[in-house]
Image (tube, rainbow, N blue to C red):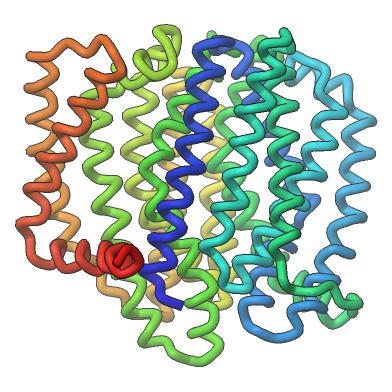
Length: 482
């Protein structure tokens, strides 16, 4: 598998997916406002909570075992048999506590929650099987169906006056589309499950589930805790509108993670294969190559966000979302850490050490939970952003330490420093341009962003090692076109 070509293919596909998803967020933010999103986002947070016990690390374990190339059909059949009882048990529990879920969300969405949980888990398993088959580039085509369904059906239901239910039902429809097409693409057949394959999946999954918990804490714990403060009327002055604004800032900051996530996703099955073959030198060589393009993307994005955060939220979503301007800056800075973490974390799991990834995650979970409780009470949504960033910094440092116990990795320090220099110059130029040009429309915003991109590109490419990496990434695209 050509890592650069596969990563680039996935990156381009995910750009399309993210554009559709982001368009949906913009449309619903402008039409519905922040408060309905303050119910919809906690609904997604609950899906994330329930996904942990219903999956129990089985999906990631299935991807790992299938990527090793042995007994793929048996592992898939075993995974399905393991997941179904868990889904049924959690669904019954949800029904028993439905009144508390309604209070937490501010709307009666219990049945929709169960249906979405089933659909999203089935879709997720199909995606992990495709990744295990090293068909990573095809997964983004499947994943784009969820935001497409959310936008199309959600908007149609909004026009019929469904309010926040339009968002939920649209997401459910997109998940169903995703699972149908995902399983249609899977080529691995389903064989009879065995006890030995179950032990193998659970042995890997027991550590992987901890990383999944960590992923949930990183993605949704802030929203979940903010929702708790709202539902119990705690001392912090937080509204559902604040939650909607916070999560929109989060999603805007995630745009810069497309490249690094695509690289990390593509990297896992390849590193897993090399690890099973004992080709550790190949792994040591590919990780720095994977880190650099990710850093070249997120560092300038932080500099630009620091200057334009308020304008980004106001122009894209509406004036009521500018309450999260500082949140957006903090989260954009945190994405530099995440760009490193996604590569190191997937590599650590790919060399079959999910236990160490789990240890790092447990520490960061404790830090995350404690800081969220304290800082949200003191500083509201800004405190949630700080808590998430600090805990992720701890997680990233621990992953780097553990990975270095097995691999000798040369961090691309020189290239990263030059990117910081170029980004600083770009930020100063964008700030100066912002003083001259008043941003009133989305065209004004895009124009100043393109100006910043041009300045950064011109400066960063004067450094030869960066030019060479850029040529390696663009080369596959030119070969495919010609």
